[in-house]
Image (cartoon, rainbow, N blue to C red; front, side, top):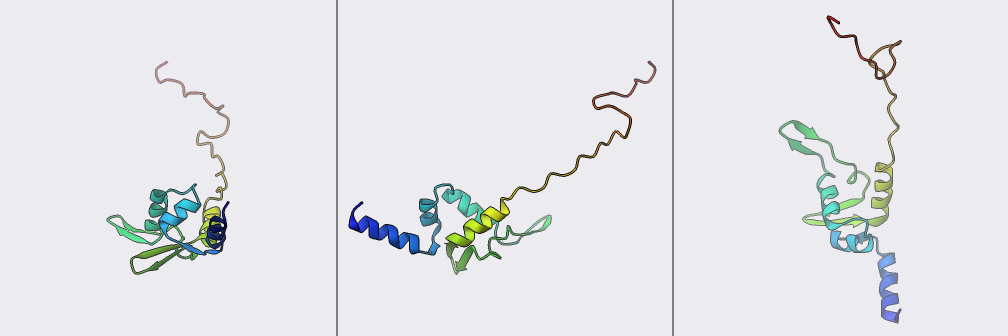
Length: 112
């Protein structure tokens, strides 16, 4: 690694805010298209069915908008993404057939 590459790497690691293109370059798990989708879904939006709430990235401070400029705070984005990606607890299974009927059993046919 040359001195200029080392200096560039040091500056990049100290940088806090990134554009979508820069962020996709340093975090290859996120494509530009995926980031743009998350940014679009960050703000609440109105549809014909009513309001759809945002994904929480704006409230977490992960996405900063200044006019048309969109910047991503790397640390806040990654912590928000980890928290939003945490697995939800599995819902309890409710057997709708009622007690006493084994799984997979059928009702007797009428007329049989």
